[in-house]
Length: 392
Image (cartoon, rainbow, N blue to C red; front, side, top):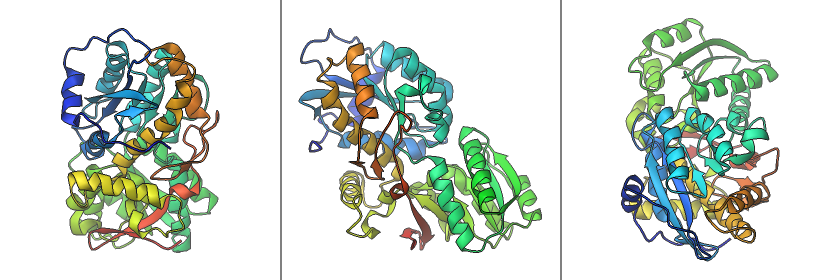
């Protein structure tokens, strides 16, 4: 793996450059590789998108001996804007690959754009539906976050070991929440556990009192909240306000410092699956992921402050590790800025094996464009406002 180098231009420069007038120059043998980044730097998913944008500043200035240009756009947590940003990056900036967006609904909407334009897309959103079923338009789409199916199995295994028999569910009323509901229904059924109530809410909602009252009436042993970022705090704080004493589970969509900050005492004791990078220092030295995870944590926090790292930025970091492995292979078959290079890059990504990332070890294939196994997940809890690794 080539050594990671600091990005010469700042993120602020990349963002201004992306939004200003841009005319792609003619390509030559020394043409730069252009990487487009779409993240939700504003809107309800800003706590996901900001660390992703920030991570661009940690990325290499060259890959495979070629200069790399990063063009960073904010979609405002809006699906329409995300699709428009993808088209802008491809049609105006002539990017070779897109990394992003931050949320599942936007990623699903961008699948057809990637396939139409034949530009590889490495998404930073979680739902397995982004890459499943494989083939067709999804042949151009990859993802670095763990699939919700992998994480749902970890949650239900933990519940079963804790003796939980009945579960209530509340999740976003979009593809992220729907994906988790489907996976939890499957996983709970396989363990003979019962889903006693299902509720939904919007990312921008300011009250979920009605949904919480319905859940409490069902008297569940535990509750799973399928949200992401700071909007996932609302159901949990409401449950505690209304006197729910049972365990509350969240998804890997809340693994950042903003969730801890906004949730405060209301999220103490929360249980969730997460990528190993969240508790990198607590991993055993024998874990192959620990070294890469610590590299990211140290680099990010050296630039942005102690405790600032989140798994969402690590998803972009991992996407760049994949690209550092794939781009040298693609350069053997085409020049950046050409259809040949983009097709070769897609093929190279699909052929990666045993690439150690900050959140797992990835082995891609034509039927798996995520490539993670159970090494990509750990169970954690929140104790005294900090993430704590739970024993297996």
